[in-house]
Image 1: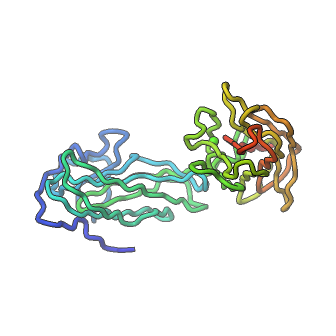
Image 2 (image 1 turned 120 degrees about the vertical axis):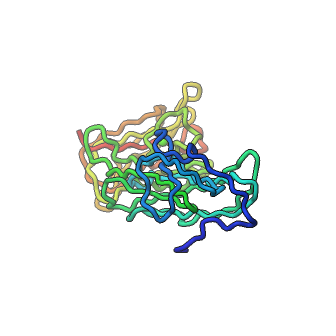
Image 3 (image 1 turned 135 degrees about the vertical axis):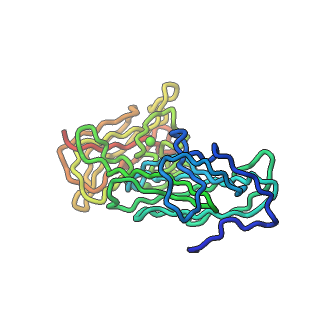
Length: 310
Ligand SMILES: [Ca+2]
């Protein structure tokens, strides 16, 4: 990692255009990241409007204005950093990206060519945010600095939900699967969204091996949890219900003491939400093991939810 990055490497003498205060005003809107135009060595501003204009033609911004995150592996957090050349001369620019420990970022430097364009054309980088396990709850600053500009995005780290009535213990947890098709993801099965309308837009899991079974999707916990109910949501719509598209023959299983125990076995299923209740068991994983689907091609699961015994 570079420790010192020159903020703006000018290709030619830069035609300087003042950045207006409104561009950099802090606290004007709940949707604005905090920004100021003071020298980068300073402390981040905290709510005082910045009225000082700068001759830097590069405008730095970040979105969203604030983030929430947790150590849950399937709830990745990211934000975007943009630089815009408001001048009339193309140039290169760098932004340094830092996070308060123990938070880490996918990128430490955002370096880009910024062509002079009319209208101005921002160049944006998506930056991943990692919250290590055990990170205390609290607020951590994520900071981008370019030249005299500094933008701070506060990240509020929340503790994973504790077991309790109605708490979905699978939410955000690690998920693995036999295979995953195209743009689908395993994490989509524990994202808290089981709405069939969102199928295909990143909220469900679809295996990749057409016509090949079995398929499986498993949720894991770093420490064993006590479970008493698992709800499996497969894909179906009013027009094409689960009886046509959903999983048909499958077992719901939990892993306890290294052994997979079947707590629910279904053959000829036509429901979209299958509720499996069972005697309390301490488990470090749960999975849906699919032997056949009603469409005979793919296994489709919108969500797997796991709950403590009631
Ligand atoms: Ca989902």
